[in-house]
Image (cartoon, helix red, strand yellow):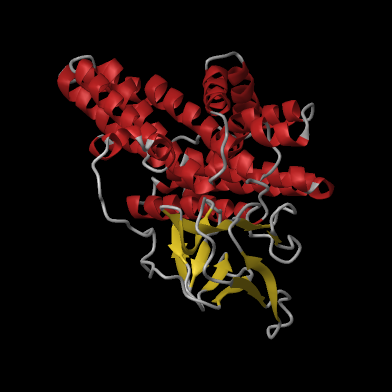
Amino acid sequence: MYDRLTSIAFLKQISADPQNHDRSEIVVPLGDRSITLGRDPICEVAIDINIYGSVSRRHAEIRPIFVRQKFEGWEICDLDSANGTFINDRRLYSCYPLKHGDRIQLTKDGPQFVFEQEASPETTLETNYNLRPRSQITSITLTKLLPIFSKGNDLWEKAYLLPGILTVFFVVMMFAFLGQPQLFNLTISVYISLAAYYFVYQLCGKNKPWWVILGSAIFTAAILRSPILNIFLWFFYKVLPGTAPTGQVSFINVLIAMFFGAGLMEELLKALPVFALWFMGLRLGKKWRSRFGISEPLDGILIGAASAVGFTLTETLGLYVPSIVQSISQTGSSEIAELTGLQLLIPRVLGSVAGHMAYSGYFGYFIGLSIMKPSLRWQILTIGYLSSALLHALWNTSALVSFWLLAIVGGLSYAFLVAAILKAHSFSSKV
């Protein structure tokens, strides 16, 4: 049996109404059971989504602390919320033992609460973030000597175990493929692509099945190897002015050609998996559509970026690297050609986070937004398509001017993507 509670505590809400800053009310008394705060109606402290849309469905939880069945107080834990929980204006990254007068805020601009306690617990809790009450070690157990047997779930959820294992795997593969340039290039490019995509995936913060993500990348890679590509090339290069000008050219002439031949063509091609999952999701229920299809901007960003990975790898390994290696091999040594190919491969693949992934993820945001706002669907899609194509065209054209302009355009493209992700968080339905 647990020790009975030795304190009485309450959670009071401050400014429940944004227009009434003096309002303060008792939300709920705290006892020996956990309470959840969030915009899900089943939460003990349910937040009005119409007022605070940036709060996650299950945002944070207040739990009683028992150490050796003895009550020690209460702690608040962030439940991996999209926009954060703040304690006394400092962001919380796991759990924090509450003290009388602590101010709690869900998101930077969200609802505020104050923790009030009528009697202090017998034991003083540590006040540093991310630290839980410590107890003295009185015995040595197997799990203390071999902690890996007691931290299974945390290893997967908090310690980035899978990315670490994959890194080791790819390093071993690189050693195995030394002296085999094509396999070595494939291995390092896939690893860099996965690392870049994982970065975007973490920013989005929404779970998506790995086979949906991988399937989107393969889908785009398959299109580039199919006759469908010839249709795209014919339309955007023959019907539309997508062919790059020759001879004496100006920045504007190249920009126009890149807008049609690279921007519009490639962004539409990379968006095909997003549209395909959108239409497939129409046959699914709301829950399954959010999980496997496209139901909101975060879905569009994730699938668009995954499609860009497939496009980048196919274009780089199938076109650019072989071309440069063959060209240099005809006039120089094969070793120099292979080294130059590797030097081209690394920045092209790594730079995709501010290149193809940025454009496609940005367009994916608009596709997801158009699903949520069907009355303005065509206007939203048009703006997203043209703006992503323009960013793409500016990147391709900037190399004619200087690498400094190229860096500015790349940074701008990444800023557009991150801004879209942050905006998508504010009205996402993700848990």
